[in-house]
Length: 215
Image (cartoon, rainbow, N blue to C red; front, side, top):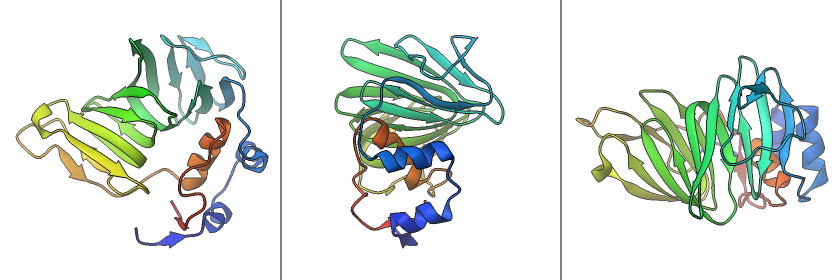
């Protein structure tokens, strides 16, 4: 992609929280599951969340204005921005993440998982993605990995996407009379955030040893 920079340049240009700086310095040492950092208003199942609290299958997590939460579930890690809500479920061995609304960055370890968004469903197998969801449109960037994307309004427009570095972001609409998967730019998520999330579960992103950008 254009405008690529070394990841250290991206880190230097960004305004990192002290929490992210601490995690990056730790390297790849998995942390315990649960909420690792939060600011502002965060609720789990309608009750105020606290650091260290486990997030379990069946839970609903919501953030308020000017709020953010970072948490670990198994070999997956999540960053939720303000005014967001997600729900966790499972069907057999498949874990389900339902993004009701808002902005979520996530990294996933091996295993079948399904992400249900207002206008599209993604089947994934060990990857990372950034989502911005509203009732009428979903932004979906597969940062790296493979995903099967199925638009809700017209499943016949489904496609499999494989990327190594933010290669094919999409806006997915709800109007079946038009192409539902529309190419989009890379927006509102950064490589240092992916690096931070992967470090929580003892991994490094695949771009860590390569040239990186200001994303």
